[in-house]
Amino acid sequence: MRHILRKVRLGVLTGGGDCPGLNAVIRAIVRKGERVFGDEIIGFADAWDGLMERRTRPLTVETMRGTLPRGGTVLGTKRGSPFDSADGVERVRSTMSDLGIDGLIVIGGNGSLTVGDMLFREHGIPILGVPKTIDNDIEGTDLTFGFNTAVQIATDAIDRLHTTAESHDRVMVVEVMGRHSGWIATHAGVAGGAAVVLIPERPFDINEVCERLVRRHSRGRFASIVVVAEGAIPVDGSLTVADQSHDDYGHVRLGGIGSIVAAEIGMRTGFETRPVLLGHVQRGGTPTAFDRFLSTRFGVAAVDAAHEQQWGSMVALRNNDIVTVPLNLAAGKTRTVDLDLFTNVAEIFFA
Ligand code: F6P
Image (cartoon, rainbow, N blue to C red; front, top):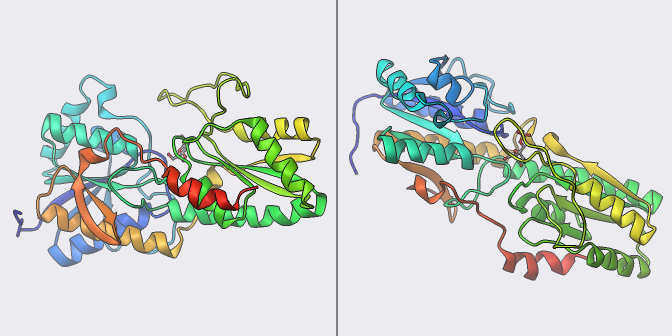
């Protein structure tokens, strides 16, 4: 492993959807870089756009004061990539060389890490990844920061829904985030004592869901919580889901399966049923202590990796250790819920 002994100039950007703990990562990068190595850290505003347009933000120990508990990102974030425009990669390259940047730390989810990997492998741009997403669906790391906070928010919401559901003998259908994976749904569902959890990894049969609720209610329970990941899909022919719209980046706009499932449960079982869409509440606000600590470890490790010139890597949590793994382990992949765990642990507690 080659060590850079001199101080370096590092660029940092936050890409994709925001996530609790982003500021804690940036703060840790700045603290370790500036105080330990004498590095200069340059932030780019609004993800790849700021890098291509040379919109920078000074990142120092002073400017990062007070940001540890703050949600969101001081740098701003956006979807999109340099590959969306013909000269995007050249603009990234020229910004980096004109500003004398030795390497770029990309704090991002699947999309940003895939872009980072392509810039590194196909264009030789020195990049390090830090895995971010509340969805916890990045390959190569046991956990992403932001997930713990989202699970806590969803669990708190479920706890609250229990008492109102019990007061009215209702079924509450809670839709949580999780586009391609049901990590939040599984963890919050188990932690919150849900009767049914529906995840993208296992297409659901609405008849079966209703049968389970009817069985549960026949045993003298008149209130139930159903947790649905936003990306949950019905098995063919079980339920019709209307065509969904797309955002400017071609992603399907999710948020709606919970209402559909609630309406079907109400109609088929006769139980009074209400949908609850948690949406972006799960991404906002202060990170949990767990996420602040994980983010801090990731930020510190990213600076060490930069000084070791481990370009093309991503910092990761493996068996409670922080390690680096090749970025292409994460690029273009989705880490889905372990179905053995879902069947053998989570489902034991469902209706
Ligand atoms: O990837 C994180 C995530 O929060 C997903 O769970 C969700 O589907 C998506 O972002 C929502 O994106 P947007 O903020 O663009 O609506």
